[in-house]
Amino acid sequence: MVRTAPRDGVRYYDGLMDNPRFLSLEDVAEELNVNMPLARALVQNGELRAIKVGGRGIWRVERSALEEYIQRMYAQTRETIGLEAEEGSEAKHG
Image (tube, rainbow, N blue to C red; front, side, top):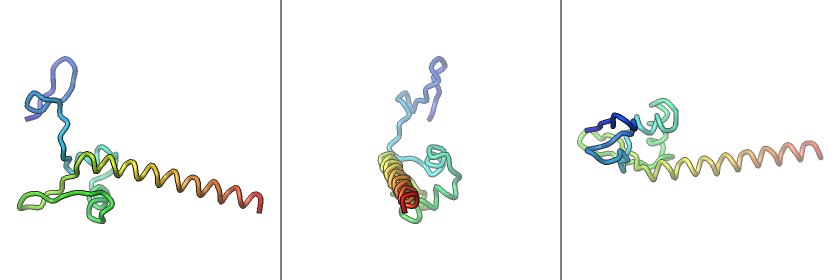
């Protein structure tokens, strides 16, 4: 049961701070500020590690897996930006 403390606005889970190990796809989509179909695609194509739980096969993403994904995307972005900067520099000096 999730509750909000009246004064500080912090979410609590059964009296503890709400910091679950596993996130739903809805939580992942919200965290990444993307839509649900994209969050589901990231999981289904293996870019974002996840597990299926229960008889209905509900996807869950471990918080650490989401953080690893974010860090990989930062690294990939840095590489892409660096590569584009190099290509632009070569074109000027070409």
